[in-house]
Length: 161
Image 1: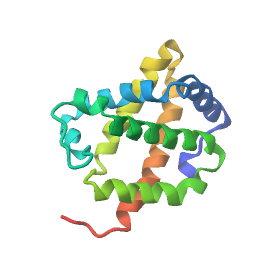
Image 2: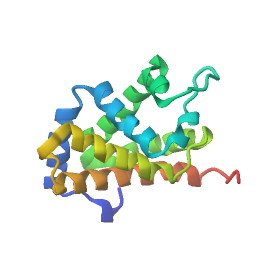
Image 3: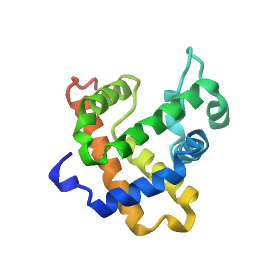
Image 4: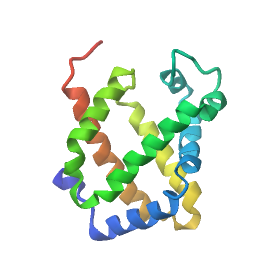
């Protein structure tokens, strides 16, 4: 993790405390995140195909068992980042490879800002009054560090455009 992105002890505590409240219902909270994502950017829906099946609507996608598995995986990645706050660099290779996988299926780096906005929205909805500006700042820093690691996966592949 870059030195400019270091989380303070207080920020790590805020992230852990808030994640503890969210992580008990990963699919439920992940549905909030992805519902918001599709509301903000409906053009992302075609990226989610399983067995060559295109979803006709976000609701159809959000209820598909394969997509619920995807939600579980996303929440596990967040959980791994929270579990390794002191040493995010140990996740570097994993996150870089995750970035490569996302690029291979057509995800654009720019879409991650919308995902970040959706993550903060989910945290705000799930935490209510406990979602303070300090909690938001801590999560933003963590998310940006994760995305930077994933972006390195893009940088190791030739541009397709």
